[in-house]
Amino acid sequence: MTAGVTSGERFRSWAEIQANAARGAGGFAALGIGEDDSVALMLRNDFATFEANIAASQLGAYAVPINWHFTPDEAGYILRDCAAKALVVHADLLAQIAPGIPAGIQVLVVPTPPEIGDAYGVPAEKRMPPAGVQAWDAFVAASAPNTAPPRLSRGSMIYTSGTTGRPKGVRRQPSSPELQAAAAAEVARYWGLVTDPSIVVMMNGPMYHSAPAAYGMSSARLGLPVVLQPRFDAEDMLRLIEKHRVSHMHIVPTMFVRLLRLPAEVRKRYDLSSLRWITHGAAPCAPAVKRQMIEWWGPVINEYYGATETGIVVWHDSHEALRKPGTVGHVVEGGLLRIVDEQGRDVAQGEIGEIYLRGPHLSEFTYNNDDAKRREVALGDLVTVGDVGYQDADGYVFLCDRKRDMIISGGVNIYPAEIESVLIQMPGVRDCAVFGIPDDEFGEQICAHVEPLPGATLDGAAVRAFLGRHLARYKVPKVVELSARLPREDSGKIFKRKLRAPYWEKAGRSI
Picture (cartoon, rainbow, N blue to C red):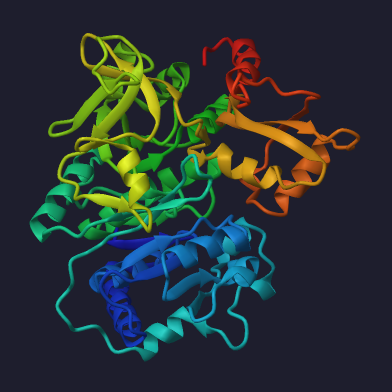
């Protein structure tokens, strides 16, 4: 397969993408964008996603992906926080966030291509840049290529939330080219990505998330053929695997669940013999689901555990998954992991504690405009993202809970505090608690318990409608329960564990 990116019936070679990226970098430089500046991207996976990323990297600027589900408030916060000087956005997404775009940002619009427009039902009139707004392709064509020596790459600044409810940008410090190359090679090693003309990569995870972004850009650096699936569909994925002889993918467990729900005759219809290295992470995977996928696809499935802040720290292959059901793996060479109690002391083997970790070769980071938050998560050179778990006698790591209440639904991180901070502003709401409950397909789904003010008339539909006006749809709880009085600790804090317990017990799982 020719080296480049295939999307629907369109193809663009890596040579063309690199040439466009050089012109894009020249155009960015003419706008005054340079080292440590930010270029925001609100794009689905497309040629321009790679071009804009590479262009920013050449100048030593941060590429800042924005979740394309976001509302004007959510997107506007990130644009202001990272002080973006340019925003590259697909045409059909511009109107969605236009009211939140701060003044002074150069907006560059990418036409929504046919395969993406069709997959998302975008009307034809919304697929082209509106009048008076500069198109990305025209901007690139009119710009002289950047000829300055490449600056140290800053990579992406991924925004990841915490207990404050507002996202924090993970701003990594630039390191030497040698260290960057070592870090890239380390990640690629556990994703099975090497310079090999027989490898064909398929991307079906959105590159506004840290892992798909890193996976896609790793493939770009190696010049591997990449096939973009415009929108995940289980049978369509099988069709593309057979058509393009796909060998490597990064997917999330929700995709496994939907694949396994296909009728047996559909699953048998496609030739999947080209698959060699499937990588998954970002969400818990039920041992039964993992076992069934290995039985179907063979021992080609690998799992890792880490975070945007840490990179890959834990990893295992299919054979280990069958031998140690439920594990997320063992610590990789050069990785560091400690499991500690509330006082920061190492717990005994098999005892549950908070997980602190650090991946090999990664440079130091801070949270953009919030060094204090960075210090809060530190334990020496290690950091925590709030996960709780244990390590067995053989060194395999198992996750038990998320100390900071983060919900992972379909591989997407969702933060209750953010939802609560909006819900508490709804007229008639006295207090609320948002948390994750088990879901067979997505791993977890969002549940909200709401305590109304005396005399207020509320119902689940009204709560969901209110949240839907302020938050992306995937953050709106599927389950809303009204409670005359929410259980509280002596301090007055809502006792979320008591609210969550019945859901997990009903599902036969512990919390």
